[in-house]
Image 1: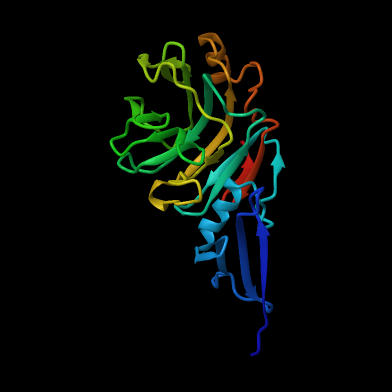
Image 2: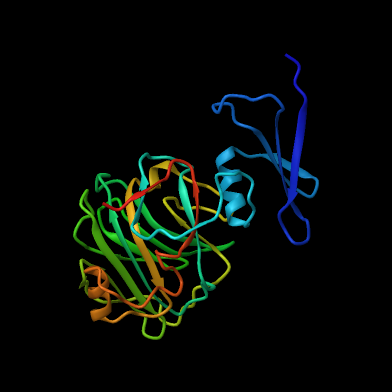
Length: 274
């Protein structure tokens, strides 16, 4: 059968230095046949797989596919990541820039992945750095990274039953701690004086190893995640415990689960929190 080909190109940088092009056959092809996609830097072009193009578009704030439609509000909803993939993720849009010198990050999470399997729980990356990453490591510890070496905590293991997990850090003293079920871990001092840089991309479910992609299935999150909230200050013990028990607390001024703006990609499901 004869097919015509058409290229779709879009500038994705203010100066027009980066152009993303996609090309496909005019006739419908099965979903298993990926588009031939090209990314061009001025006159130099190179092929990239579909997953790299998708994450590149999210990181650059460009919509290339109808699946990446911004939605808002997840009150009484749960994100389900059912499979290990290198393409399923949720991109979050903060209510304010992520230039931070303190924060509290809270979420409720459940997974059946074995303890020896590394899991990304939260990823914030700018062009050059993993600015703020939270992991469950292969040895079962939970870790926290700010642009370099991380800090590690022995916490109760994540399991098929939902855990409430919070992380606090402030630059002035470097004091950081995890909170599990409203109980604080031992404080550690980590990167006093550090500042988290703004203008990056926040993902749930995947860790971009570079600003333009690099997703790995063996690091992906599989399980359920809900009630992701973030503040640009350290919540008090009483506030964190109130959040854990579902009581009213100040709405997250970076993320508020009830009004959060997000984009789904891949096999992520949004289901009722029952």
